[in-house]
Image 1 (cartoon, rainbow, N blue to C red):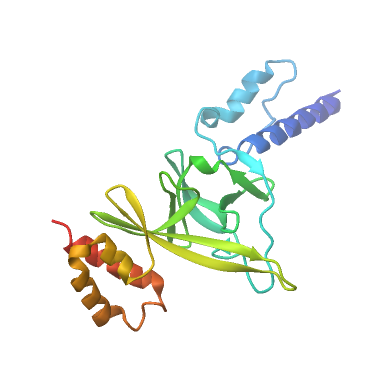
Image 2 (spheres, one colour):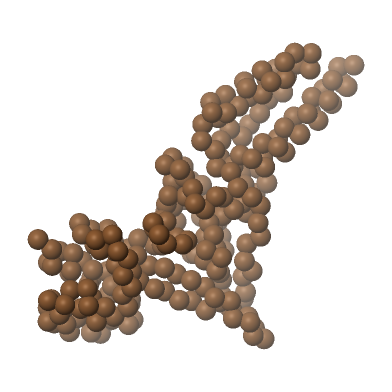
Length: 240
């Protein structure tokens, strides 16, 4: 009789874990059946097992396949490997969450703590994530995630990375990076010196001189650094 009850308890616990595993990603993960009595209130056992996790914020989502990686190119940032990172979800920060950012689909996945498979969380609920030392966040009025390269007093520099699948005999992903300066609540595309000159027409001569003296040899070789320096110049000198 005891064996039968133990078997039934294990079966019910399994069903509970399957359900909770499909609903909860971050939260309490270890459950005990020692206090589970079939002749008592099962709901009381459930509440005791969930504890504070039953009322705290949980990250939920759906299972979804990630993009295919090829021998010569990857659709992920920074690589195909899971990276322990920080994540802000609905205003709550989670530490050391294993993430992978599928740039091709522009979707952030986390590793399910029990099934160890990619889980697409609710993207609109993600405030920001920090992966491999790079800070990404959602931008109001824009789709997907943007890397924040600079946040100053008056200007913000964002980078949007995309990976387009090119179907050939040997498929590969084509990378594209676009840069944006946020000023006075407006998002402006920047990709060269003249982009900044249009934003600050009265400072055209200063911008041209700065690029000539500091960025001429590296402007196209290191776009991140070039866009960053120009944004810092404008933010630091062109505002009262």
